[in-house]
Amino acid sequence: MTQIMTAAEMTDGQIENAVNKLRDAMRKHRSEITSDVAQQVLGVENLGMMMFTPFRERAEAVSNLIVRTAKVNRGRSQQEAIEATGRAQYTDRKVVDAMPKGEGDEVEVVFFKPDLSERNGFISDDDLEKEFELRGLKPADPISVAAVNEADPAFADEKPHGTHWKDAKGNWCYATFYRWDDEREVSVRRSDNDWHDGWWFAGVRK
View (cartoon, rainbow, N blue to C red):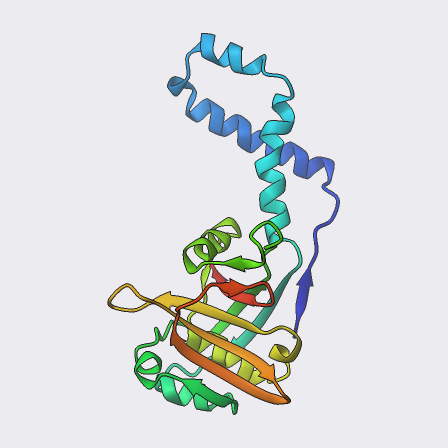
């Protein structure tokens, strides 16, 4: 089942909740700022908008997410998990065998597509980590993502997606699921290039 989460207009209660959280944080850290400095900052023009902007950025980041749940057989080997998707394989077997296996018999995977319009349509693995963080996510393990594609092979037809991780030597690796020339494919390799703006990314909540 697919859930598409979309942003809705904030309620007065949610605004009060946000203000209360800010108030609590400022009271907790009041000793870090002197009264004189606080007064100067309060005189900054358009301060309210400056404080609202990071809240809006985070709200934009978590809107229009696609959430999928899937059962995962953690008893399989990494290669068996890939084979169970029934996809044509374009993989490096050493990378497959070293894939992180993850935890849990049932997972909720959150898919998102970052806005790369100000990045010339590309994003590095290092910067992609920041996109996960912005959404309160961490990259989903490839076994969980494989389970999503095993349960619904057609999902990647219109939403090509992937996840990434670092191997024991600190190299970025990836697993991607997509359709190319009427063939459903999976690719698992070391990452040598940036991601382009056609990809969605799979994460799990921290």
